[in-house]
Image (cartoon, rainbow, N blue to C red; front, side, top):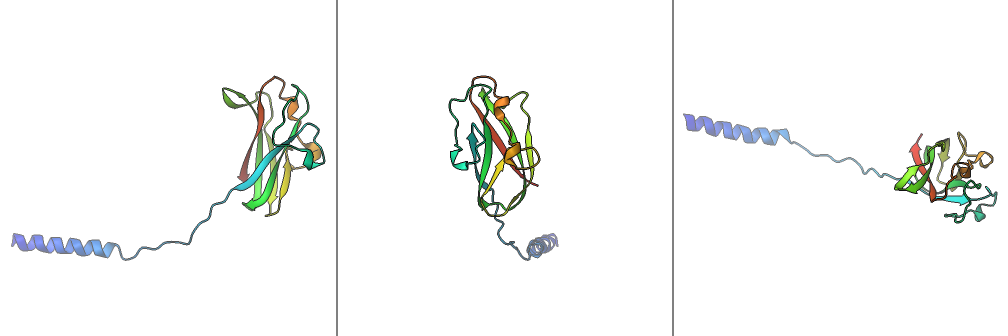
Length: 150
């Protein structure tokens, strides 16, 4: 009788395992994209974007210099918020004390190339931040740009 009970329990357990997994389903693919962009610098905030460069050597401490980010148009499309931070290289890259964090809001990436200047609130060149105001000491600086969905 005990052997029969154990056999019945074993068979019931097998049926329960089979009954628990009836099907497995997979959803469609999810493609995650980022933005494709690069940061450029100018000593004069020139209206000719061709004169801007990816690096800016030999800038005197406290001298004017500006930045913009250029989006290629590829990648993410939609509204983004851009946060700009001036960093210097001391022991690693660190935010510069006293330099503001600039936030550019409501930037629409629509699949076309776009230039966005380091301006608080909007992306206009006339209000582009002069980072030279905050790079007062000799050293190496760069702009860190964080792009987030709005």
